[in-house]
Length: 61
Image 1 (cartoon, rainbow, N blue to C red):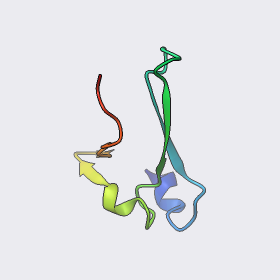
Image 2 (spheres, helix red, strand yellow):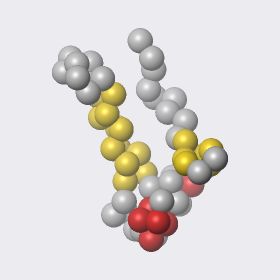
Image 3 (tube, rainbow, N blue to C red):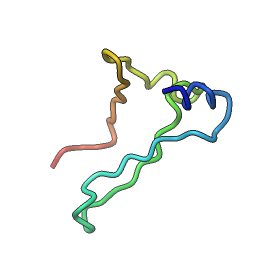
Image 4 (cartoon, rainbow, N blue to C red):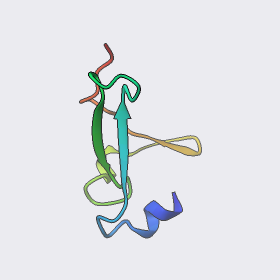
């Protein structure tokens, strides 16, 4: 969280999200923006001590 805040004004901090990592045919990689950047701020949801991203483009099979 500290690193994300430190890089909130740049594109140097992103979060890779990998779904179905162990199933190559189903594997998908998403590049989520820094939750504290202008681009990611509206997608951020604080939950207790962590952060939760709603991932509408990721669907459960």
